[in-house]
Amino acid sequence: MTKTDWSKQLFDDLVEAGVTLFSYVPDAGNKRLIEHAAERNDTTAVLLTTEEEGVAICAGADLVGKRAVVCMQSSGVGNIPNFLSFAKGGNFPILLIVSMRGDYGEQNPWQYPMGQAVEPILAAMGVAVIRVDHLDDLRPATQAALSAVFAAGQSAAIVLSQRFLGAKPF
Image (cartoon, rainbow, N blue to C red; front, side, top):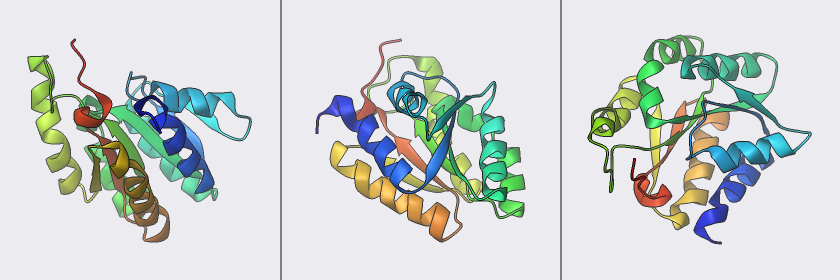
């Protein structure tokens, strides 16, 4: 598998696990994953105006027996702690896919503060962080996150590092 088709592998693994709703705030890191969701009739890509809406969509999906995921860039993690507290209180399974900025190879100094805060914020909100640094990490990380969220009821985030995605020059 090449680095360019990792999103297809991730998409297929999520769909095989029953995920049908892919909510997202647009980002280069999640672009192909969302395109895969939009191309099929049995999955739905839901454009968000803010990341909090994705947490609510995941909770709502759970209420009607569906499975959903929220795709966002790392800067969006700063928007969701309050909604994660509601999800935790309601015991809703939340699965996040976070494409990182502000880590390995980052060239934009404005990305570092939030990039450094992602894992501490998620940990403080009780979200298991499962980091992907290499292509070989992706499938085991996905399976671990799916098990945590949909079998054990533990919210989880698959964090796609810049080492994995590649650093952006902007």
